[in-house]
Image: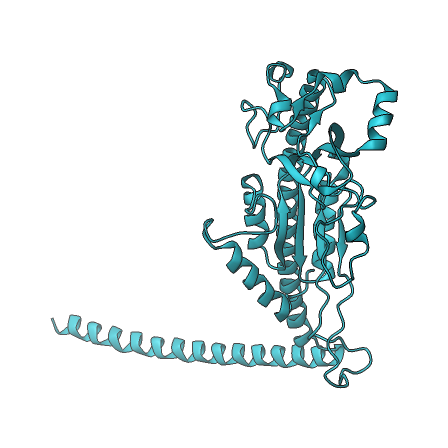
Length: 377
């Protein structure tokens, strides 16, 4: 049975729901899109209706193409020797990162082919992808020479220029949910795992220590209600993820020599295949998302039924306990009830006998009067 929600959780949930309830024009978040994905709105709405759960961030699933940022090995001398208090002229990206000039070239939270609906759970047809210029869609330039270059030329170019990779990724649905207790988090994780989101997990399981404003007055064995554990559950599945390098951007080692032109390094049919596989995974992702929503609602309904049965059973047991009596008390009670029934029966018999006597006297009186009247006539 799920425990009641602590006051801290209720307050925080109210603040989050107030933010989510704002009009789309006033709402913004830290994602590249800056808004909630349409494909995940029904799930978010369903979760936020439930006691003990509130969503904190989400993504319905997406296809992303991005150019990674510059590496940190080739900063100019003036930047490398600049004082620590002076901000560098450009940021530095880790391997595969989007910092240091990295940018999104393409992002879509819906299937790539128009004929495939965003809420579809059916895989797309293969023939829908071959006629699209996917390099242009993904913001890449076609460089035939780059496709035919040999290893020696590539090695020479790499030694002279910095090579930044263009990544194609499909990322399945991810959802973060703040829960009111460990029991709420465990229920959510069971539903997520059963629906196919097997890499789901929880963080902030141990409550954060409160500021030391004074010594705690909580005794041994008592729970500090002012600082309850409110885990955040991440619902996710890495098994559907897809990643591939599809382009490069070569530039000089100095930032001012940087070129923003990203060139495709794979043939068109490979891009078409990636697009088709991504849409197939959109369909599987949608099926798992719907399965998770159904599983969570059913699990909550089961918990409510069990809680109601528990409360009903407790009331019946309490009534039985209040009416319980030992053998001697029961014997005396039965004896008194028997004596009362005997006394009531005797009183009833006496009243019946008295009523019969009065009836006989009345009949004799009426019979004599009639006889005398007949004689006189």
